[in-house]
Amino acid sequence: MKKAFTLVELLVSVSIFAIVMLAATSAVFSIVAANNKTHAIKSVMTNLDFALESMARVMRVGYEYACGASVPLGSTGDCSSGGTVFRFKANEDVDGDNDYNPSDLNDIIEYSLSGGQIMKKVYGDNTTSLPITAPEIHVTNLTFYLSGSAAGDLKQPKVTIVIQGYAGTGDTQSDFNIETTVTQRAIDS
Ligand SMILES: [Ca+2]
Ligand SMILES: [Ca+2]
Picture 1 (cartoon, rainbow, N blue to C red):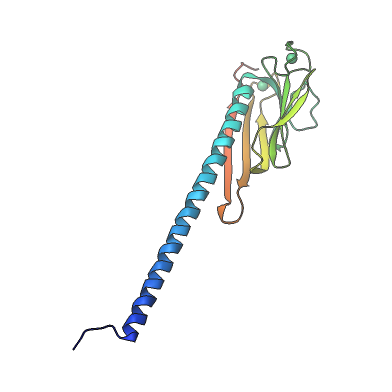
Picture 2: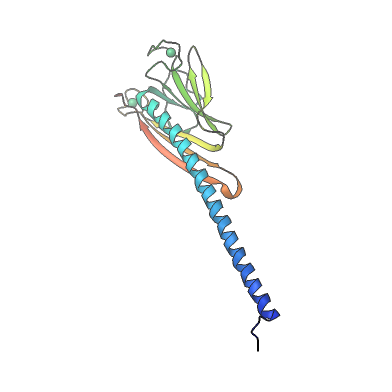
């Protein structure tokens, strides 16, 4: 008797093959999705790291720290319970007018949140305002906690920056929550 597949055997094999293929395909798709997500997180973190690093670098060497929009330009002011605006005097000509005077109201840098992006405003003869984070990054919270900004409080000005937000949408959305602390380098009183 000749050996051959019966119809049932054939149907069973085809079904098993289909199931295996389906599983393999969805595994490939989930690997691709995971890879996309990893890639999205990586580029977000690179951009944020860069923004935060450049903020911290100029803040560290600056002085006259002020937190909160209500503090007059050129004055200091703490916000131990958190503020959304942070301002300080840079240690060099940052508004690009080729003039630097420690006691005038030029070359003051301000960070705040607008439209999901961290904004950097430079006060001076050439006042400018520019986002320092990519539009793909949605910053939902930017809070500064500042202490020791007053002269004579025997505390060094110290600010903690908290940044929260997300990048991507749907399955590729990645949330982030980062925090860094900057202490003024110049000795304060
Ligand atoms: Ca200047
Ligand atoms: Ca102080």
